[in-house]
Length: 369
Image (tube, rainbow, N blue to C red):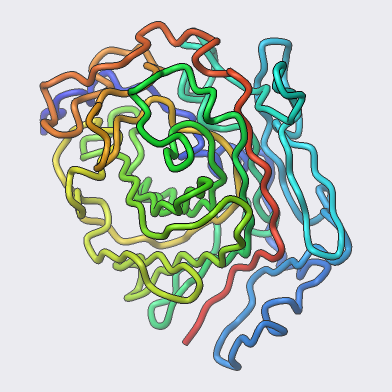
């Protein structure tokens, strides 16, 4: 079958969207090890039908040696082996702040970035990822989705983005406090067999449900990124997030504070309205089933994303990847190319003093009958 438009030259993309893939490549763990604070999910009222695959309430701190695996990140000065994050802990969980500083305010700001000439897996889209962590126990291939019941990734988080109001794109960004392209924290789930992703992206004023199929080299299917606003919030307001796979991996749902806010049983296809489509790589829809899913937490951005449903300006902010036939107009699809405010990916448009403070009170992966 001939490749669809844009597929024959797809680069092998590294991004926050594939962040868990990167961490997974670093280690293989086969034995199940419950972490310090592993009883946290039970204390919050889990039923007897819920099985804990992994849980951490960070009551004994953040263990990056035995429990958690951190991904690296690149900066103009060199590599950050444990990513663009400084981790502290207390009785309320962990706090992650960027390693850099906003030169105007002195507040923590992202230091990690990648330009269009970045070498290695993924090139320029590596800019999406700033800091990422996932449980070592699931770092090889994740946990299988059961044939009955559900697979769940759960995180209790607080997020505050700073410096977003200083964004350099002017009126192209109508609401910096809500726009997930500038700076956000993310709960990531990915099924590597199908290259499908279901995330939460949290900004100061909104929680977005993220739904994707990732572009891979020679992939002859539709690849895309949706960001659907599903919950209004204020900066610093805690939210309990759950991503649930059920029906044997045929359906994925997003839950905020215990309520389902989005769901689809058409995984792998353009399942939602195109007004929520931020990135379009084009290709034919192909419905798939999630079989084994990884979960992690991260911070970063989506600077190559187009405008949202309420934005008049639909152009992408920064062309992070300069490979031909990679980005298409989300509203029209191929062959219409996507437009960008910055085609050269200037460093000043990737780092301007923005950053995210992420607090995680608890994190767990469970299955339920």
